[in-house]
Image (tube, rainbow, N blue to C red; front, top):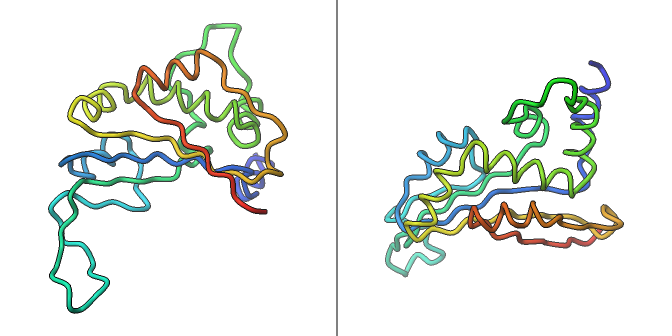
Length: 168
């Protein structure tokens, strides 16, 4: 148990964030459905902060929701039953979601598909956009591949994968 606590405090080599844009959806409804608090959120029609005291107050033209995905709380509990005798050991899951980018993205795809597909389809059918933002430094990942089934799942859910490479 102690090693798990220590691992939680180590910086991760990458960051996954979910971003949703929608013509009018209330960000509170998104948070409630996903059970994640956003880092940034605003609703279409809400006043925007003006950069100038001279300019008239403007409003947001779309709803916006952005939340980092915490691998320990968001991915730690698998959203599906594992077959008897073929259960994945928790330490392998922990490694996959915190050190292995392909594993973390794969578990993210499974979690979104199994637990939140109806919400994601609603967002897309109403003109919204969904992105999984992957932020990493070049030294964090030596190699990366996205298996066909994972890319297919994101495609079926209408989720765009965006990669941002940062400087060390």
